[in-house]
Image (cartoon, rainbow, N blue to C red; front, side, top):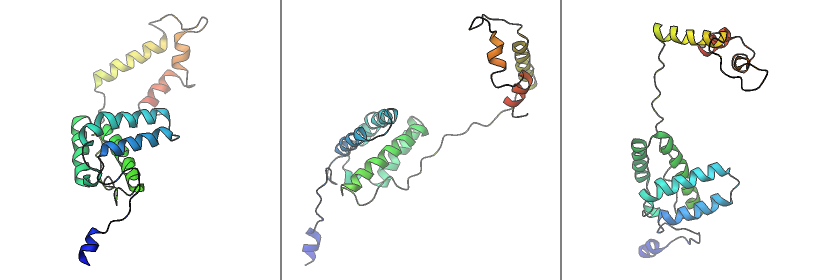
Length: 182
């Protein structure tokens, strides 16, 4: 009786199964992606992630062997090698790929679920020193007075018409707005 329970398997008739490699899952995923109504740039980005990063690193891994640990090590490596933005994109693609595997009964849970992908380090805001402030102020004033004229882009308008008043604000007010003060 115990041997029958060990030998018992759920029938799996999907396009992929747990013994298939991630390479096969990627083919099924990309075919579904192409047929989807996603924007063409999204399709291109996901295709690029699959072919540039996922397949070279994970293509030979069997779907059933792709644990959260395997995926996490791959994502962490991407963060170190190419940065968190690409790692997040690849994580999103892998998550969608394993949703496909889940629909085809190749896995019982999505191994990407629960993996956190760190965000990039935010650079600390830095205030201008006195010299930088004076230099910037002089350039804005010069721009506002037209002391450094260039040919106008269209006949009958000056360069400053479009640059300084494009938002309906004076140069001083635009400068203060750029600094976060109104």
